[in-house]
Length: 279
Ligand SMILES: [Mn+2]
Image (tube, rainbow, N blue to C red; front, side, top):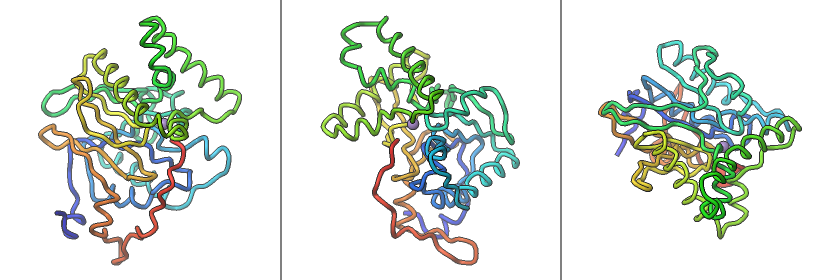
């Protein structure tokens, strides 16, 4: 078990994967993320989408200091030599207009293939690209390949149009949460769809986010890794120096052992709200 001393010592990993922080929304646990980033360093950090919640910011501006602190911490790490790759999601879709660009040392990519220290190829993407496919999985399986490709095209056109017209993004996850009975099916379908995409791209695994459901498991013979979120579970995935992947549940670790702040203050973690904002 981690001790206070260990938690206040910086742990170096090869790669960190973080997604669904939703900065700009009241639900974002920015302070916990700042603490996490304070005690974790990496050669490469992948931001796997929905880091900033553009949809929510458009509706009402909410940007308290801890949200700034997250951005500052990341920029500081970039300055100190960490490679940071920003893979946008549906809530920070505006970043998708800048593939290949660098902002303050942070590189934007629509998706990527990450090769682990032991040579395994992982597809890294947010996952919303498959919302329409996941929602209509049963009918698509019946209709076959052409329908699958068509659904992918519809997904991107549909969201572009909604975005131009200023409508909020239609959220697969919140839709699934409303249909609680279908939620398990939906998660399974999402995992399967992403695993299949990884196989198509010659990868042994996929690392994604979007559905706010952290996971490190095998699906369809593919390693399915979901980074979870920082609005509820506060999870991240780390690649150790030997290439093995690990799921870190930071809300739980911080609850067990308070992280020391500057001047001995401790993180307030008593009132972690259990309300999940729309994914
Ligand atoms: Mn998302």
